[in-house]
Image 1 (cartoon, rainbow, N blue to C red):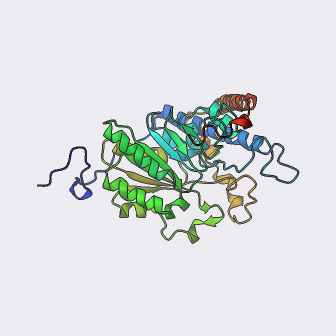
Image 2: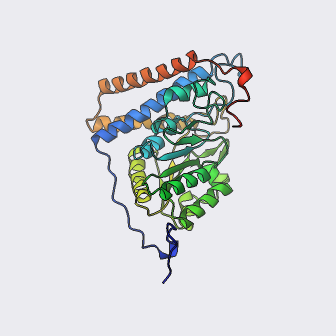
Image 3: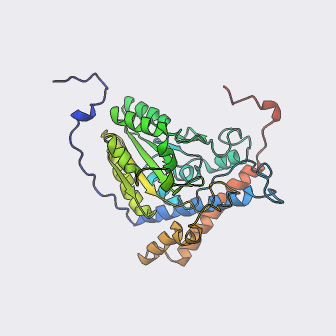
Length: 349
């Protein structure tokens, strides 16, 4: 009989057969919460879109304006953040991509400080040094990076630490479908299974890696197939459906908390706007179909049909979101820019 060293995970070949998890069907309060989160995210992205383009003209100068530099917005991908993060606490870790705002908001990152960081202000999460692709909030264990697939390895480290401390906390690592072709993706899946780590991998498939369609960059129809090859449960969720995402994420999160190892979810979602602001998207043949696939009015109709929403409730929810977002924008604009004399501070130490 093989004896395991204390604290070492059971090798995959010695683990019991996988049992299917129970369904995670959202109750009425949760369904309304999912809708509120999606509306808040969209309201935020619309406000950042507005402020980003201030003083970018004439024409489009990416270096001008209140928010210079690139900007990657997540309109259309709200169901992923809402459905997954509804199962998490602020003690759990989330690592995100260069398109991070939806996940940051759903996981409870301080919106004032996040907005100040996007505006490059001293009150930002990184004192204005990181910008929108490098948001770090240790209070809720959130991080993101502009490097493709970079968030997967750090999530393993966090998951390893959570397990060594004897907690039921987990890590959620999010990346795009293009990043599933990177070495870090495969190395992370292999190690997560080998060490039986409490991590949920999420692949946001929005069909486009910048301007490259999935069909000419990825050899398999679903990255769930790749995960299964590494010996972990995986599934693909179609139609950008927030309740289906909530259900699948609930089972994956539960599995991780119970010490039964990693899972992968690939979610077919939607990038409504450009890869970055200023992207003319001449390469996209599906743009005329995009408005009809907007997940927020789609879910709104579902909740109205169920008797959970009416026009007044929708108006109130949108007004509440707008108030909260505009307060964050005002906070950022009223904050000071970093002193140029401090350019070397907080960056290398």
